[in-house]
Image 1: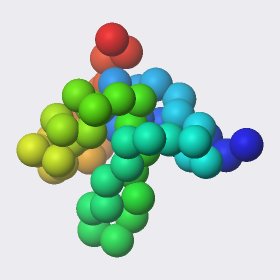
Image 2: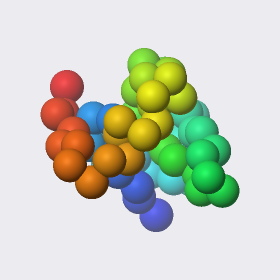
Image 3: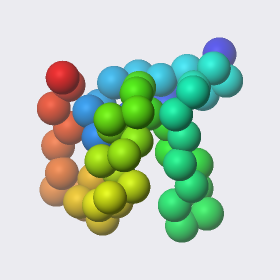
Length: 57
């Protein structure tokens, strides 16, 4: 099963069963939960910045 990394918290998410996704700049992002998705949608540039380091909650 394919996996992605939640860009907000760094957790591994199974892409096929992910309940929380968001589209940004033509790419689908996958999230562990609603909170991470909402944080990302509020400020995507913060989480996509190469210097950002996710903190697993």
